[in-house]
Every structure is written in C-alpha cells, then in structure tokens.
Amino acid sequence: MTVRLKVRTRMDPRKLRHQTQRANIQSLGHAAAAIRLVARRSIKRRKRKSPEGQPPHTRRGQLKRAILYSVDKEKGQAVIGPDESIVGTAGAAHEHGGPYKGERYRKRPFMGPALEQIKPRLPKLWRGSVRS
Image: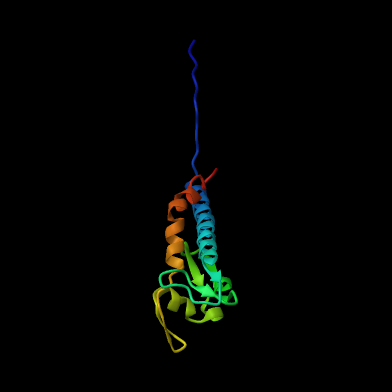
C-alpha cells in the first residue's frame, strides 16, 4: 500500500519576526522577574549586619522592596536592581562595597548571585516561546 501526501506551507517573515520579538520580550520579563524574586528572597530582615560576602540584611525591608525590574521593548533589554530613588546608593554600596553615609561598606552582593542562581533556568524560559 502506498500513501502519497502533498503539503504546502506558507511563511510570512513579518509575522514570524513579530511573534519572535513578542516572545522574546515576554521571556525576558519572566527572566527579570525570576532574578528579582531570588534577589529579594536572599535579603533577610535582621537588625545585625550580615557577614561579608553574604547578601545584606535589612532592618525595615526597604532594600527588598526597592528591587525592581523593567523591560525595554525597543532595545530588548531588562534592568533589574534596587531603585536609587527609594534606597539611594545603598544597593550599590552593598553589591560592590564602598562608601555610604560616612561608612565603608564591605561587599555583600545580592544581584550577581541571584543572576548566577537563575542562569541554568534561562534557556527554559525561552524554549517553546514562539508559537504559530
């Protein structure tokens, strides 16, 4: 028994490009949200300072709430980190070490480790994101 089959497909490059861009922005937003969540969860509410090299502690939770993300659809980029209008340069002082309000802060990174923790999951966020 012989079966013959003819198949025709049509591809619209503009539609494919639009779907790809849309899926990329959506996946980028999911990735940024995941990194933000991990960074927020790494910061604990404590009165004492955290040890050097560990994520910082926050007394009132302000640093945790200040971690935001934004996706720029035009550039296809995401920015994730503490909002300077909320906590000033405290986030940078913790992440990289340095002066803040007359004190010398030691490195207590929280954004870099959050990215490293999420890295293995990133390809899964894009897998299967473009559908017809």
